[in-house]
Image (cartoon, rainbow, N blue to C red; front, side, top):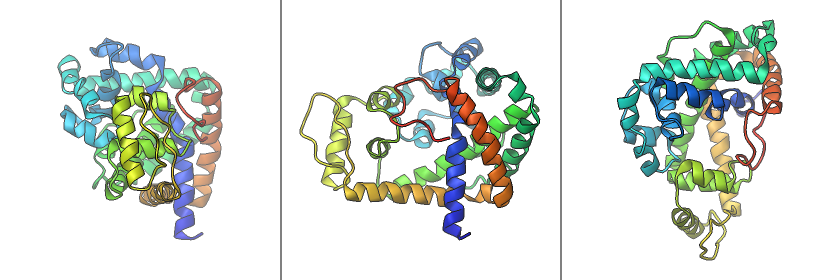
Length: 300
């Protein structure tokens, strides 16, 4: 298998397993546990602070830099105030508690306690332990956390490390391509496989005016089709050049994210994909993500 084929296979495996990590951002169990730890229930700080907590009590600029496609204005409404309400260590603990509860609900206790779960956890941990922290700040924060004992939490933590490692590399590529956080969101939405426009706007904190101004800028660069001025959020449509850029970004993200997965080799990576894929399908079938979030179903 060529280097390119290996990178693509690793990227597909990463994307295929990502729902097992990402379900925590939509799990009802998470909100209540973060509120119990001291955060304001119903406030966006219950997203920003727990995800950033492995890096410590960092400021809003660090969170905006590592989360990237969120409006810095939205981030600043939560950080650093969240740290006055709940220390990072308490939020890390609450996050593991939430992951435990949500995975048990989505997969069932039998799957959580199965031999397949233990096998998947060991494989994913082997890949995660091959992650190197250089240039990967969000992954580095997760790397410094102590490993949990329960296999389903080992799997979740390993996939969290690997997801943030991949994301850190993706941000570097977005910067190299000259795409701001909003512009990255617009081009991703333009692929038709990311967030819906409504969810992208509401969750990332951009106004309709900012969104449409971003579309206009990217149209000037030839990456999006021109859209007439509107009072409503326009649908970003990729040009041929825009589609080529997104493909290059995806391919290069696979390449920059492949190293940890390569330690598994083809056979063990295939086995992790087989077991983990079955868990993903169960989680999706049991409502891991609400409707109206994704334009296309998360790949699994």
